[in-house]
Length: 307
Image 1 (spheres, rainbow, N blue to C red):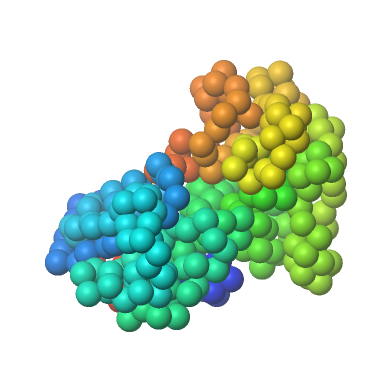
Image 2 (image 1 turned 60 degrees about the horizontal axis):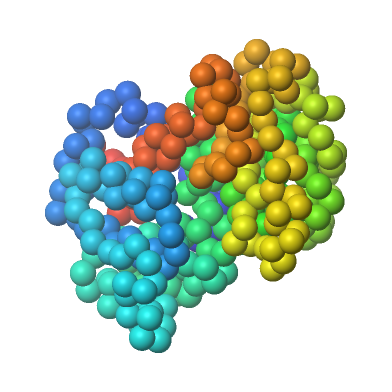
């Protein structure tokens, strides 16, 4: 396992190993303080990010390694027209592992095909975001104690949301998963996901237009924002951005042990009044992202047996 480009690059056994390692890091943080001593992570972020970039950097620093990189395309030679292939060939001279976010789908794959160091896809357009998927899986498992026999509600922008697409593919490999898709018609899950995942694997799913009608059924409610940057038409964005807002009133019908997740950043799709609800897991989800990236980098660098 040299690179992580798509969540399906990992077998269920490999995912379990990474999640188990992340759990052990959470329980024994001092044990891992120098595992990556002498190693360098390059963060190659061609579009803005807060949580993903900083969590990768914090992860490597907490493992005793160091970080180099850039946080926008304008601050790299991409602004001069340098190719992704040439960028990664340069970076591998300086770093031991790289995390790349790019607005173009497939760019991290291109990098991995030209790299002699492990490349991690930190998000490519509307395509994949595998480390967010690992974060989500760790959070679901810590919240519910399992990754099977769950009813998962996905709410908001299900058409352009790469986190949703990655999570659907990853969860489709576990037993007893039922998906409820909560979105306006314009933002429903793409047909290729329905065909390649739900129908091909005979996984039950329903499409609804309000969260109220399904709230009592849900074990997990995965909220997403309606992303301005994924729309071609500003009028469509304005019309749909406030379609689905979670507030305490809607939660009255929810199970007491339901877990609310969100990849963040949020705009107004979750009321701040929900933050104090014990079912709100989204900030714990952020922290889990750091621990799962620590585990992943250890595995890709072959250091998971060192600690």
